[in-house]
Amino acid sequence: MTIEGNEAAQAPFTSAREAVDWIVRFIPLAGIKFGLDRMERLMELLDNPHRRLKFIHVAGTNGKGSVCAYLTEALHSAGYDVGTFTSPYIETYHERIRVNGQNISDEDLLETVNKVKPLVDRVAEEYGQPSMFEISTVVAIEYFARTAYPDFVVWETGMGGRLDSTNVVTPLVSVITNIGHDHMEFLGDSLALIAGEKAGIIKAGVPVITAVDQPEALAVIEEKAAQKKSRVYVLGREYKTELLRRGENEQVFHFDGLFRRIPDVAISMNGAHQVKNAAVALMTLEVLRQYYALIVDDEVLYRALRAAQWPGRLEQVAAEPRILIDGAHNPEGAETLAAALTDTYKYGKLHFMMGMLSNKNHTGYFRHILPIVDTLILTEPDWLKKASAMELAELAKRMLTELGREHVEIVIEPDWKQALDRLTRMTGQDDLAVVSGTLYLIGDVRSWIKHQSDSEKGW
Image (cartoon, rainbow, N blue to C red; front, side):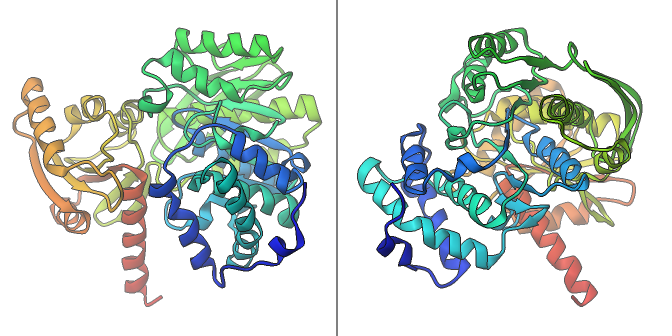
């Protein structure tokens, strides 16, 4: 069934702002919904636009955005048109849907949303209201398939995999970056259960690239791949890295894959985890080269990997004082952040500001962060289900006492702008300030600092 004429002719919105407001209103109203019935029905009503596209499906607990950034930069630099769908956004909704690194335009977003809204309303009557993420997924597919026409779509999952709305597609290759303790209230309370949900993106005969290293999680992925007769490429087995040197804004490593060796690869994103993410992207490109005759010249590949950036991940947003932002919001993210702050950066004192959502593992997060901070500023994001700064402080105080670090200064400031002001004022020339936690806080801080900087320049 395709779109009926009277439905296609409807134009309920006159601006992109109205269209976005309609989509995001379903965050609290529709909540988080799993299952593919609504997505499959929407694809049917749109005459299956997803079948026109070539997807690279990326799942995992952490690192998805960075892997997508490496893949997008490499493919686009090689001359391919690349659509990218990621979430959540940092500053503007339009960041979710991009072509060749450029956000979807207001005009294209408005046109596409006006096209799909009548169908979303119909599906809501038949199957229940689609969620914000489901609507965003449909908008991305329809835009890519009938407006942008990219050669490849780098396609990031939302929360899980098996019942995630993005799983309506059959990709060229499936990527599972890693498995960690996040969204456990939805995905399961063990690494094996979480891995089972992520492994749901594996399709029959479609190759799988992963950096998962926990035996219990990897076993689940390999079992699923065996059932689907899909080849699995595992970091440390089918491909490896050898670190040559690491400094601030540069890491250099050798890549040894099943098909060939790529020496002296340089990346500018910081943290040991970014070497893994880059290796996952490299192996994905190598598999595409072998299976689908992808052409990416080595000179282009080297340049693209060095150029790749991903906002909100160990990103320096101010120089005086030096402020980094990082969207680590779960224990594994905190572990990689703490390792990077210890191994890569030099500073006198570390002043750490954070705001979280209430459904996260704050104890696991603090376990990695508290041993390295000199000052801890606890604030609250402007978002639903935010964690109380006061409650976070009480937990941090108990854990610091257990660690014998009672000297760490704790500041409670629920207003994140006031918290950022205090962070800025207390950070000396030789110190380092870090803002971390939920991406909803990171995005606001990034936008605020950038706006202030542009205002000072007279822009």
